[in-house]
Length: 323
Length: 130
Image (cartoon, each protein chain N blue to C red):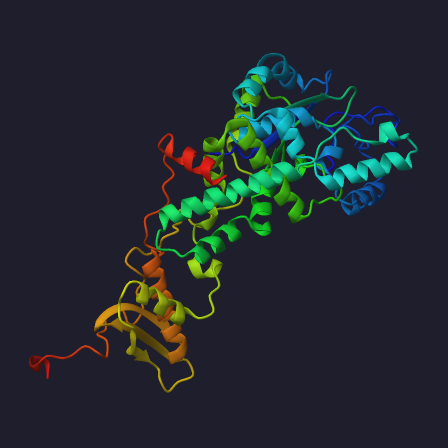
């Protein structure tokens, strides 16, 4: 929007006579209608710029605001290191070499965030795996691994990072920052928090930002399994229950284009689970999935996640021992 | 945990214009208190000398929305109220809400479907029902 001034402009101030400080470097409002239209088109077609290159940007203040926003105390130098990406250091050194500075000036004094990112990733994975093993003890290792991979995967972490304004603070070569850079930066922030505040607070941080992303998601959307019936047979043999016998419970529209079959799995004539499907095979597979959900305790009507304050000592010892 | 959605507030005003008087009073008296009470919002004060556009309070949110609010001819208290209102908002667009209710769990016992209360084929009918 080009806001029209409420008071008259100076006489002859039509074509930018040093009033460039209005709105900090925006050109002054033009009087000619066609020129205004052209300049507006230019402004809309200009490539997007980093927030740090636009007016009104104070890096130190932004970093302090970030730590307050997330309600955590960071050691600020660790946090600043966490935002520096290796691609940024390379591009800066290349730029300085191009400008013809000698070798001492070319080498930047900045450190990478790769070390912090690795530590953050290891801690996040260990902590989340521990959380899931505590909450769903029946879930096998592969399922826990699938959930942890989903939560620390690129898409989710870069989505969370975008909504916490990390894309403004991260120093990297390309704009807009690619998702793997955002993921690395966010994990480095977690690593920096681990170094500053210790494993307990970092665990609470990881829990508060990652676990709500599981709300509304089904187990088998995240964990792809190929043969649910085979997996169900394995689980039942582990618990010494006989093999399930599939029977059709209900059926609708058998001779039409869209039939619906409800297949129930019975163990020793007691119902285990029931699932719908278009064909008999699909219904049986769905019933096996429902049975697995019930066995692993990941149904839709399970108790919601417990976000209360953890008991002192237990969580910290486990986290330190798993690191 | 609660994350305030307001990232930064930019106060753009002119030091000599008449309608920016409230903005100048806000900067002199209340801006520091506001910044201290909201440590997670970065407050930028940028006076531009000479006549220019009207004084504006620009709010940037975490999801990228930028909202401009005119503060011409407003008193310092009104600007404080406006700033707190912006600080408590999220960056979602202000549009008409279609319905005043929403639920993530529309059904507690399971949604009804035509086969809910029908007996299954396997149910054995007792002698009385025949």
